[in-house]
Length: 218
Image 1 (spheres, rainbow, N blue to C red):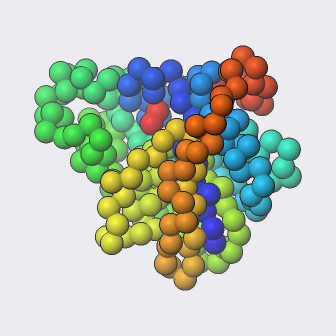
Image 2 (tube, rainbow, N blue to C red):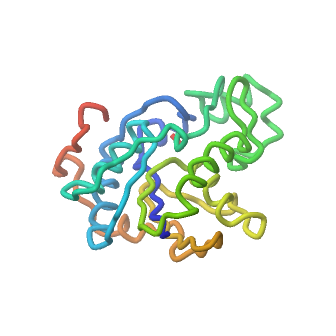
């Protein structure tokens, strides 16, 4: 099995540094352009199956990549971002001010997150593991997975185990990571590839709207 892992494009909440978790925030104009760029980068890659978080920022990115392909897109709630509970919609500074105990956790250390009323990294890994276990034992296809930074960190941790610290990886918006997974062993082919985003950009207003344009994270 080969996995094509893509983080969704940017949203307005990403730009303002807000934790959006389960909040269904649409792609910003920049995020739409990023999704289109990822689609162009993957245009020559065969895709046999596709799975996405059902949240609109991931769903819109996945639909842009699959546009024109006869590949059905399956939405799975297990691929959603962290449930950030009481942290939803807040910046890190606001979280630390309202919940001082969070101050002992680094902003980028998702494995240590424990938001009130939300999920821990262990919780996210459990649901991602359940999704992976349904695919890995028998699937030899190339599978597109469009999800969120927290979900992708959890998936990488499940694939590579203790031999690799998934938290040292950054998943940039609309980045592409390729993983080969055979007989329970994972091999990274490309990691957080953003070369397609450094090409001359198309002004957002010139980009065709996404199929879910009416519904414009982590």
